[in-house]
Length: 411
Image (cartoon, rainbow, N blue to C red; front, side, top):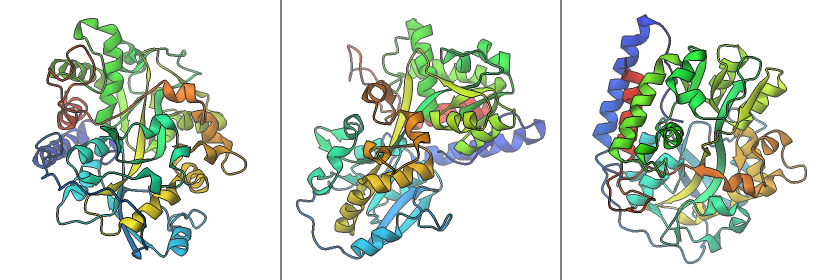
């Protein structure tokens, strides 16, 4: 979900260009992110809405590419027009090219966006920087129908700052015709094991992939004393970076668009990688022999959520949007379009949704959902362990730097 698609083994002719692009990205990151909240001035705490008033007639949103559809890409897929007709709120949105741009847009005091569809690497920074408002869940019909674990992911001191929208799990994906069923993240991140399939491995291109490698090190190198894969000390992050640098020569591609990973497996160019249950389901149904495995160290996941801007100009329309997007019918449409799991399990009931992604993600299986380690924005304040809050941990800026340097710049 971050930046543009990049490959790792495209030949010496492209090495310099790729390194230059990575250096430019790193420079922009450091310029825009001075601290854990993105380096932006914190907004004045927005008051939580007490009642829902008349619709203001407009709604201005921020989302990543493809996250909002009004029939422009496919006339059969449109959850915007019915909302406008029902509420009188005309929807417009700004497409953020990267999660950093999304954070910058919502943190700009001159902007008054009503809401943002934030992935985990954005949501935590916006809450810490007071760039989003507390949500009055009593005003969001259907909120209590959303999965309980997902509802708890964006709470701070008992206050709610986001309404769950979609979620996914990160698992091992492998071609069963070539690769024996893996049981550990080590199959992907241990350099010696990865070397067996050098040039045929794909990895999700996100700093949050560091957590998957950290889970492997948590089990394989207990001297590091990793307790939480999303809360790493500088020493622990440095160890993960070294692991990624050693793994990199075996990686064919770092993918950002899920379709790229599917294409790599479908064409036979990839046989092992990090992916999602739905990607493997699509490939399996196409006869490609691709399956998933849950690593013994644990399965990570992510959730995107709608959040209210701290300077929202049209809060009543925003609450109408929160109601709309939490409804099972809209959730079913969005999940089918995106190929990821809905936050409202009722989206998979009856004839609302196709069974593919619902079965692949085991929607409604609380034990499965509760077993997933959901991503959150890395923070300088350590989480977990007997001395929590006393050590210094690494924030998202440091994770982004380590990821770029390990996967784009390392030799």
